[in-house]
View 1 (cartoon, rainbow over the protein chains, first blue to last red):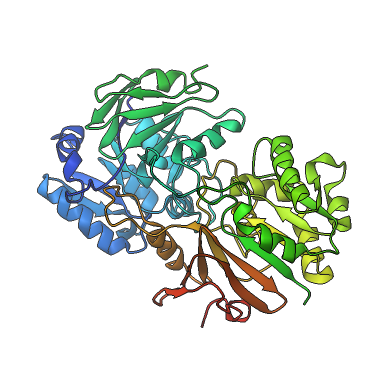
View 2 (cartoon, each protein chain N blue to C red):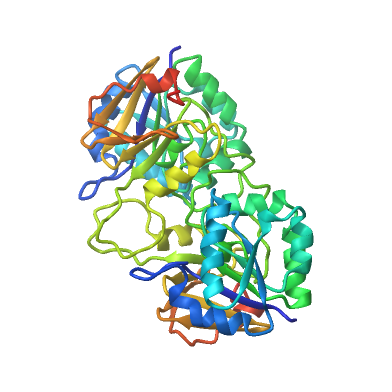
Length: 242
Length: 242
């Protein structure tokens, strides 16, 4: 199991620039052996503009970026990739495009079998998990399934947001929405990654990184808070916490 | 065209009880001829509990309630219904259950051809529209399509929420999410119904009711605010505002 993942809650933290808050983690994650990163901009409509943003940021960290939409054969691009980064945006649009371009299986194979490092942010973190069932996004397009790349066997809710006790808004809180997910049968844990937090997965080890706590939701059990630095490896082997 | 719809943004307004804020509209909508209302509780997990809540409220307004899950044949229940109310909850769960129980076509027929009054709240409003693509809910189950009952040819975003200029949260605002929907081709208008507002549709006439403004989003055009009392009939004949 060569899997290496850096799953970031959010691309931009309030007051900072694009990926600023996690740039040191990005550098140590891709390291010195990776020279070029394959960027997947499918979650946003303006793929060229999005790739330029990612390219500029990664250039400043010493990496070249190829946009997967810039090449004739996306599957071949995944086969050759030294590292993969899937950016945020709309999760439904992203997942549908991944299937439309036949890269879901190939990305899984490259990451799980060949050890190609995978970074995801927001929607790119959602699609790395077992399914997109705990995305915050609107279903603007219809993907063939909600099953995702499945690099980890549980769900993540990026941009996890605590409910505001002073709010007069009556829409469901994030916690209520996740609870509704857990009313469905056989649903795995959901890791609520607050903005500023990220999950590093190396083989069978998972570690919470960043500056904010994460909240873990398990079907039928009370939710639990985890501090940055926590070892969450148990989620990789027992995603239902049964 | 006998269509009569009461599409409510939210079931409960801050500080009030279940359906309190729209009870006068409910009474005048169903009127004196309707004695029994068919309630569809599919959006919540606890169908019995939810039906009791609706039954108690409707009883206080002079209507008996049948829960569609309480009968052996849901399609037959729709065929006999004098009035229909679909409650809120998770829109994906609701739409999937409507298809699983084969009632989508029958509800459309009863409302559009037979003039059976249809009330929806929140998720029940989403499924009355052309599609659920502008729901706020998590995709906790996979429906066969995002196409909905199609009683109106445009989309609604219930619980529409203005962005908070003081927020430090970097997740997309509601407006940004709707804009992403409109980046997709051939997407109709989205009526953002703030909590407290509702849309009354009678044949080819649509009127905004309630106490809050609604915001109309059109692909490629600036969004527009409408006051309570506004005539929005143009959306029924030109849902793209072309």
